[in-house]
Length: 586
Image (tube, rainbow, N blue to C red):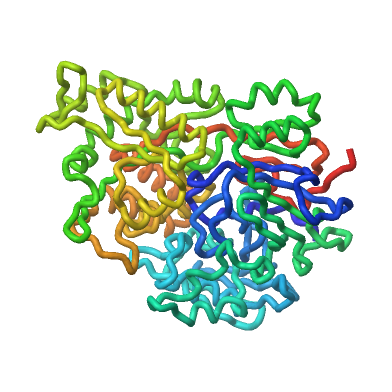
């Protein structure tokens, strides 16, 4: 039947490490494509980093098109809806859930998709300590951090068991299911370093025909720095009410463009069907809306966050501190972090960089989430307050107005972000200027995505970053930010498994309190109590400022009117239900 669902969960929380996602429809851009086949061409600003959904650390990625989980979220209603599972039952004590798969599911190579694949995905991949991934932390239950027990009942039924009630139990079942027959050998065999060969499986150099998927589309071709081409998966399970196979559109192409300006030119000339509307482009495109036969959709504030974060890690590795001890002392002084928060002019950021098309963000929880606390502490722009805080903490000013610490050291640090994101780079430039007014010298250095991820995850030798994470309605799926050993606990990251251990890393009491609140909330089934607990966690974050939250842009997208069936939302965008979209002949 024709589904009214589908928000494809983004596999990674580090959305803003990657380039903006744009969409297009231009047959001239596609090689070897029959002109009579309906297609959508989408544009991205960078190459994919992997075709392995379990190992992915970025968004956008290909997996919203190529994989499905047992269930999915509808971004319009917020309801959990069937995907690979056609139904489920939850025990009275809320500790067991049994999923029943749809009949005759198949992988893109025609092999059956069964309960074996579900059990393999969870037990052999996600829960495997030798396979680092960003999915594991959100499935750890309670204080013990134990994982659900996942077992096959028969070829179509899988039972999940948790040691205690787990509120996000159902929503957490939307992760991509992977093919056991194609991947099991790579998990069992190891390389020369003793690591599973799975860690190098399905990289971007893998022939597309070797990548087995269960989603609406499968990879057809990848040409580095040119395009990624997808073709309709002939074994996809969904049909419309008349029994027609979905999706209607046969091909999707991601054209890798040079920059956002290039995409804008292509859209204005009629070559592209849609484009994410940045603040710089809004006024221009709004004037051309009727003539260009497109609609600009506004979904309100984007899900996710943008923030400034200092490296609070006091650890050492091989006898060397991760952060210069002088700077570490500044960063770990709460008054210093609060002064920086008061010293950033968010209203100016909204007006100048976002052209008024943004809102302040005061929380790690998305503004549109029902758990967002609109009464949470906010840091308005107040230079005098910022200076008072610095002076009270022992900082001082010299005759040139430069900020010094109590030992006479000039306060200066390096701020990094991902190069190529124009909005992020503009935000960093303003932070540099704003903090100069406090006497702080900021060396703003945009760097390449892969280098940035390595610093945050492995070397841990950074001072301050300007980044963001994806969001959603359920805050629990960001718990790997708040577990003190979480994979994305970037401001005080523990050493990754297999890397040189750290000495002297300290977990602060408020860090543990936030972690405990997230764990407690995951056990609470009463929605009003869950909201109270998340409000408490938000207050702790804003009081202690591991991240200084900044501004969220509005979710704006211009889409040509000949694309039929668009149901726009900030959570899903214009193409969350791409299998239901049709292209008119207009």
